[in-house]
Length: 152
Image (cartoon, rainbow, N blue to C red; front, side, top):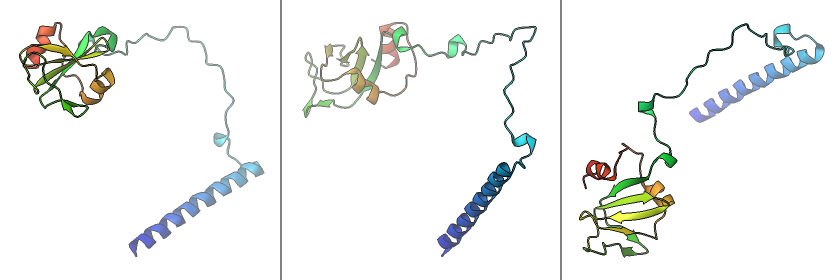
């Protein structure tokens, strides 16, 4: 029942808006439009004697995030087993199958186990990495600093 009342009120409001619009169009056709509603001809802006001040609208350097071409690569922890093509990926050197560090660099994805063994993973690409990684929480000057930050 209440939905009928709301629908009827909405229809009445829409009818009122359409009625006001039709009345305004009729006044335009009759030439009875107040001058403030008519479009004013564009005028050339007056040339001022002094130029506009130049404002630096960029963030301060400490708040800027490096662009993708300024970063050598990105890393993310992957504590779960990594399953690709219905197969659990294991480290080729030690056989570990979980607690990976996934590295995306130069268009390739590498896996690093907790023991420090690294292996390329051709079944993963940068698009996969971007879909599964969250936003960066820090940037680091060296690979070792990043490893320390991620607890490896």
